Length: 121
Figure 1 (tube, rainbow, N blue to C red):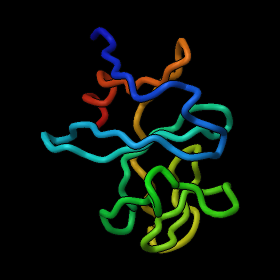
Figure 2 (cartoon, rainbow, N blue to C red; figure 1 turned 30 degrees about the horizontal axis):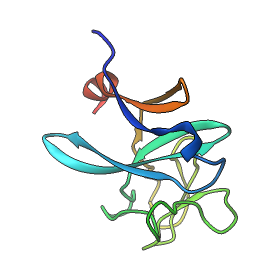
Figure 3 (cartoon, helix red, strand yellow; figure 1 turned 90 degrees about the vertical axis):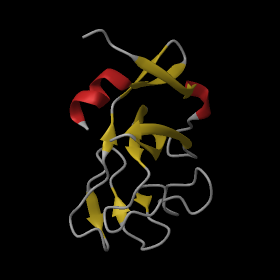
Figure 4 (cartoon, rainbow, N blue to C red; figure 1 turned 180 degrees about the vertical axis):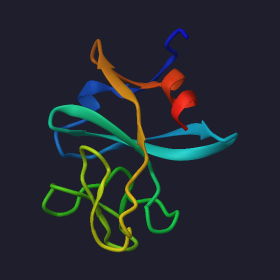
């Protein structure tokens, strides 16, 4: 299958462990909120939904990191997630992590790999 990509943002929009960029995608025929951040110098994207209950994580638009800038935090419950994998590391996520999304950085832009999305979700 040919790779289908969708532009999310310019690579320069993502500072290491800084503010994220929100975007939407379609999953199971429904619009879903998602976000991309930069961690370990790579773009990392996830559905914007806590593993505990389906609420969005950011405490202000695009603010996903906790005060230490080491973990992603759910503003509602305080659950912490590892920004490289989305794995639950602490809090009310009951071991359920974030759903990661396939992204690639190329030519100074970050793209969602939509073909891989259709296969995995």
